[in-house]
Length: 333
Image (cartoon, rainbow, N blue to C red):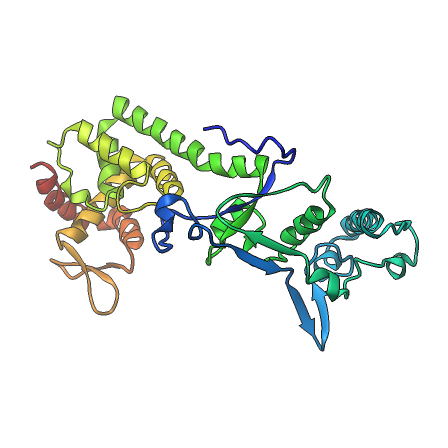
């Protein structure tokens, strides 16, 4: 799919609706929508008020804490960038020409002073299900909105697609810069394709290991026997990688498959034995939160990871052999 931008727009920067297909949003996520058709969200630039003094999150304030915290060289470069943009906007909007090296630079600013609430309160974004394209190169107000979004000035618009995915409370919109967004979108595809390639290698060359991986990753891992056709194992792992089983996060599924496939066969088998031993109640968790060997009541650990490490110890080989024999009776059916 090639994403096209309107022909009358030269810029590839836009505010786009964000939706997560795995998170319920009144059913709208099924149709790739963030809002109901015809609905819009509108917001002014956010401001922080301390002792009656307001500070707008414009991204164009050289005295903001995020600028002061930068290393001195980066701070100087950032201040120069901010002054250059402010001087450009003053020139374009109110014909006020200022030298960025002037020691009284901010005293000569007329419109973009940080306490000019009459101006900043009018800089609003209005977004719906259609992309809102920004042309910062030609429209000074779009340039102001761009800096404000990147400074976190709008709660409804994330700075990037990556940030929108990362936030615990997903925003309704995100700033789309074509190259950055394309990179994030293809990240999942790259890992998924790598996992699918590894799946094919295992199917062609090491089906025993693939069967062991399936027992570990599939929530219904106990279904896999030695008599299970390899094509069924392959198909189920393909569904797992693509997020078509219980776990829907394609990124996590693909990465988990890759991580598991990199384990050595001994570790894989022990982990599979531990998982199925829990399923068949050969090991069990008691009221104290620890896992015990059911037959001998031997303490194995608090988590399945602890149990695996316990069984790897040669001193505990007797319990490992016991569990392996019991589990393999089901595997060999």
